[in-house]
Image 1: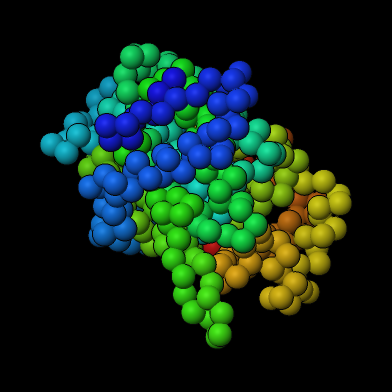
Image 2 (image 1 turned 120 degrees about the vertical axis):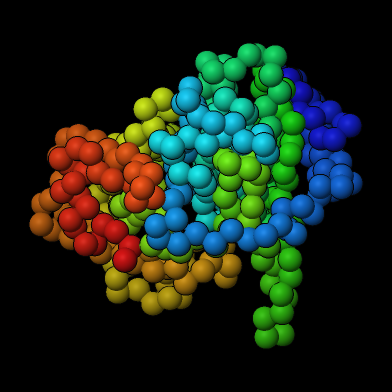
Length: 356
């Protein structure tokens, strides 16, 4: 339908191939130009950085994961337009973004968030927005304008970021809902250049971000590896699964707010490659990233840990899921996600499955 950017509006019809081509050629950049002229254009970059460590309470979303959340009927409204729902953490967010993008869609009734990587030539991005639109159709009036925040990517030399930004905005523009672009810190607006020896290297300015549900506002963040659970190593492995080729992992029940990790399978060919990672040099590990020079040390550390976990599980013939889901609920007092079913309780005892 329509994407509002300040006083400007943008829209597309999915069946109009001529308009889609024109949007790729020029309209896409017009959208970035319109946003950059707004007074809020630098608000995220200038905002205070939120530091999240273990025990601070966060709904962390890994690459390939998404959530849809409806606030409970007894959730309190704040003076800032936010909501306090004691069955949920204050923050929802993600990190380790280079060419990946975080998308937040928010309203007073709830929110949706995904860590998108652009795989499947746009099919997963399309599926993400289909799920998000269906969710908001069920909890809000179809006339209500939804706020959207897009963060991530930079001027990478293979244009992965540009392609993903295009996928995201195309889906927003052809949607049957009206969106208001509150934050745009992606692609060219999230790029900086640093000097590396005699060369200049493009880097993302912001690669970790959280939405503060109390304040109804987005902030740049630093999120310690220990705070990226529960079961962070297992969840980071989802991107290598067969399921990840066709769908994002929707990890939260929007009503009960249970965090639910569903079984996934990694094919033999992929497993054979993952087995070798433990023996690879840092240079060889770079083949597993679309933007190897921009990745953090933690990216490669998590890659190694995922390899060790998956290899160990296969060797010892352990089935973490045991044919069922792993379920967690948020404990307000502990500010942690706690296991609530037997499979999840057993999984948390496996040291390789968590980042500690």
